[in-house]
Length: 125
Image (tube, rainbow, N blue to C red; front, side):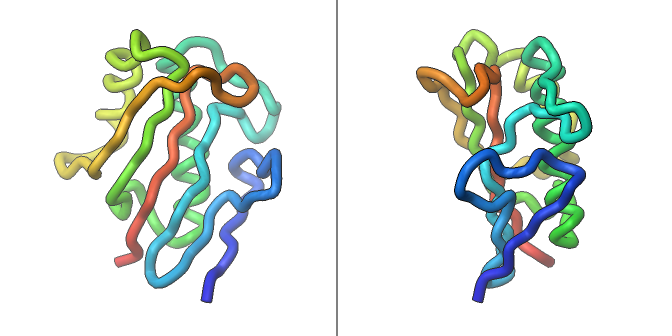
């Protein structure tokens, strides 16, 4: 059985997908663009965009009864690998000492010309 997770505190899906799905004690978040859910705008710069993506992630996780401590895997999509270092600074600030597993790579283009998109998998404790 799967449960759809949705909150107005993160951007609504811009296509035929859910913000997150909970199934079997796991929460699978769709990739989160750095869109401010109240304004629909994206901040400028990779660090501000990384922060906003994590704000969206945290809001969806909270709706599912989780925090970043429940995250076991992330995938970071970047518009260009030259942005990796600056993204990584903000990324590292989001977690305690136990970082989740991660993949990170550049893609040809992200929706809405974002610089970053982050998806996560969390396990409910």
